Structure formats: C-alpha cells, structure tokens
Length: 474
Image (cartoon, helix red, strand yellow):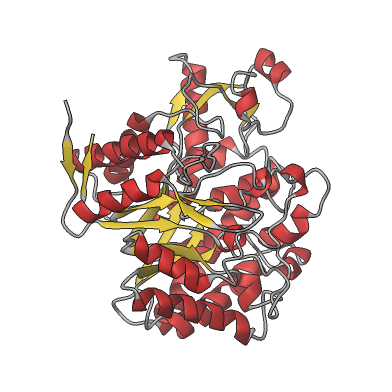
C-alpha cells in the first residue's frame, strides 16, 4: 500500500557540491594550490592517481550547470568556495578573478530563482597555510576569519546563509588521525589540536561575517554527525560508544552550541593531549549564536571497546572499502579506545550500511539535546556504479530507493518533533570523491569523465517531482 508524506510548508529543497570536487581549473586565473592538490600528487594517496585538475570542469561550464539546476527545479543550491581561488596564499591580497567567479555563480543562481547556500570551507586549505602548520596552528583560525570577512563583504548582500565549515571532523580526524584525507597525518593528538582550531575558526568566522553582513543574514555550520551504536550491551562497549560519540559529535556540538568541551571528552583523551592549546577566551569565541545547524548523514557507526583480539585484527588504517565490509574492525580515527565494527548489509557502493531508521534517531536526539536551533540536512545521498544505458538514460533505482527511505526517515523525525527545515541531496553531479578519485558516483546527474557531458539520471527526474509536490510517495 502506497503512502504519501507531505513536508512542512516552506521546507527547503536543494542539492549540494564542493569546489574541489567539481570546479577543475586548478591552476587557472590565479588560483593557488590547496592541500588536496598536493595530496593528489603523493603516490598512493588517491585511487588511480586521480586529481581535481579538471574534475567536472564546472569553472568553465558554469552557465551550463546553472541551466541544469534550473531544469531540475532546484529551489536552492549549496556550494563551497575555494579559498585558494579567492586568496591563493590563504592570506593577503584577494584574487579578483577568483572572487568574480563566485560573484557570477551567485548572480546566476539568483537570476534563476535559486537560493544560494554558501560554504566557506570544504577541506581545501591553501597549501601555504599548511606549510605554516595548517589546522594545528591557531593562526589559521585568524586567517580564516579574514577570508570570511572577504566573502561577507563581497557577497553578503546576495547570500542569505553562510556556512563556515563543512564536516570539521573529517578535516581533523581523517586528515590528521587516520591520514586518508589531506594533509595525511596519523597522530591522534594532532587531530584533537586541529579540531579545536577548526572550532575556533568557526567562531571567528561567524563574528567576522556578522560584522559585515546585514541583520537578516543567517549563520550556520555543517557537521557530519554520527549515530553511534554499541556493538553489544556489555558495559565496555557502551562506554566505547559514549567515547566515540564525544570524538565524533560532541567535540564540535558542545563548544559551538554550549560553550564548553564535554568533561568525558577531556578525560578520555588526556593521555593523547593536555589540551593546553585551548587558550583563555577561546570557548567564548567559539560559542557564537547560530541560526541553522547543518547535518550530513550517510550511515550509522557501530563500535566496540578495544580488546587485544580486536587490536590483532586492526591494521591501524581506517577501512572504508565495500570489498572489505566484512573484513573485521577498523581503528576509529581519533581514539585508541574503540573500534568500528562492520554492520550487516545492504550496502551502498561505498560499503556503507543502509539504515534509514538511524537517521531518524540521530535527528530526534540532536533536537532534544540542542533544542534551540533549526536543522537542515545539508548532505545525504549514496554512491552506486551508475552507467549510461543504450537508451541514453541512466537508470538508478537503488539511489531512488535510498533517498526515498531517508526522506521518509527525515519525515518521521519531523513528526517526532525534530525541527528540520530542509534537505540537500548529495550530490548534484558525479565528481571527484576525494581519496576514491572518480571511482564512486554520488551524483543525481551522470558525468562522462571523458567528454564531461552531463546526463540527468532517473533519480534527478524523480527528485524534481518530489520538489514540485513537496511530498514523497512511498
């Protein structure tokens, strides 16, 4: 029996991308190198040696892509700005050509009645800042505030909502603990230091933006929050789940929304760092009023306490490969006290388990624990090995099923009292999927990487209908 779920009036629908994943033009018009340009050129870091040099060539195909968004009926578009394109060295003079690109992007969106949602940082730190210590250097937070002010002055009259950071957990822990993201370090203590400076950068940026934008401009951050489950009811596993929740979620939620770090986080990481990098006044600087909390969700996390048996199965490297979905536990980035345990399928092409009910639980939990801030789903989606069929179409029923079930989970959370105001599908188009290169396709639009031709998949046409009706048929 079919079911029709209607979403609240004024619910915002959209799709999302990130600069490094789609823009290309990596060394054109004054853009400087980022840490991901460097990381891509280090042997063995990225699948097949892929780079973001061309990506989807969005930089040169801006008008075409804007028209594509309009044809798909997108009311809103979430994009990120390349810091290296706007400020090639990460500080100092602005690159006029880079700023002009984003001006044209924002103006083009508005001309098509598409609301821009601008993200300042989606992992592509300018390489000169990394050379000076990157996110382990607190000065990077100050440079980020300067960069935020530049964007606020240039676009604040046309962009209604600014997002400071996208998934700072990934920048801190995948970049500094597991080493699978740029800059590729493997030091849990450094990861915690980077996490704090990312928090500080967020707060400094919000303050800088508020100083140069109007009173109606909204401020937000996007976190990839984890719905953490204990592998068993054993007290040790329950304690491990609580510890991972601190590392994955509350390390950002609490300082940003409450002005403090959780006591159990500080106690549970005392053997890794003394937290002396938290200076007087930092927590007040981080704890700035926010208008929206962005949440990215793909799959839940199942963890167990570290035991000698589990340690024997762990290689010390984060395992995120569908071919190894049942290969045993992997070290959870940022902690030596818990391991991630494989979950039963079905899986997406990333090897991530599909459990929409976990999405509902996460949204309800966040709404209850942090009740005064509206939520927007800024990323949710899935990778599948999509191909262009003989009929010229891309049939992706698995993606439609995944998104429909997760939209159903969002609706259930709203019914349970969660204040969810919008949903952005990841991603608008197939793109450079970080360490996976071009081997994973998340887009609702297929990209032929040889010709760069865009072809809307069945899921894009389905999503267009969901948007048009503000309703979901299950």
